[in-house]
Length: 230
Image (cartoon, rainbow, N blue to C red; front, side, top):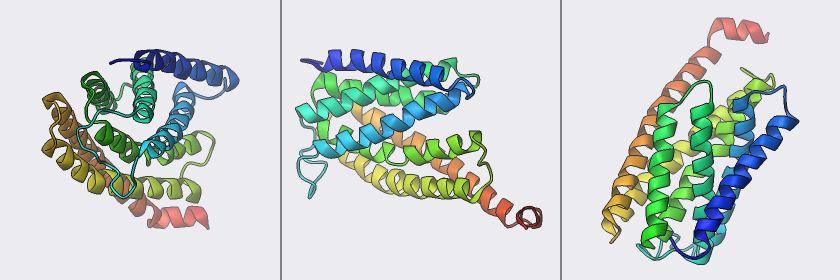
């Protein structure tokens, strides 16, 4: 990891942590999880934006394979690496520790860190950022809406549906293709292992999302729910 990247990661962790503290103080009546999700939503928008701006050729967005990250790609990767480090500690301090989320963060931290240390896999890692974060604003929106009083509303259901659709398309269509391209390229073994690990976590989350969608649809079609709306 050379040049400005270590400083970007360090100041990124400080910046995300500071943002959380400021939001927590500004919204004292909301939960720890709510404030953290506000920060996470900002990161998702920043990550997708930086990843998009770092693509050199949209006709072949994950080319060249196994290449050294460009300066723009380094900025995008450092910003998300710093966020993942911050959010991993937040997961540990939350009331309920999410094991699968912690595993996801560890896999991502190791994968991005390895790419920056080896100076390889720049295009693939940025594509992974784009794929994994594009559904995140809707993931967080559905939880934020619940806390501000919109649980079981049409708006909350729309956020659920948007999240499920984007996640499924991105992670279960784009994800396997990106994993295949990462494995077939001349990337370090640790990056290949982390790529497989990330896809396995995505598949597990897809299973949980499918169960959530089934539950939500059955709940909305139940007579008791219809009577509640009438």
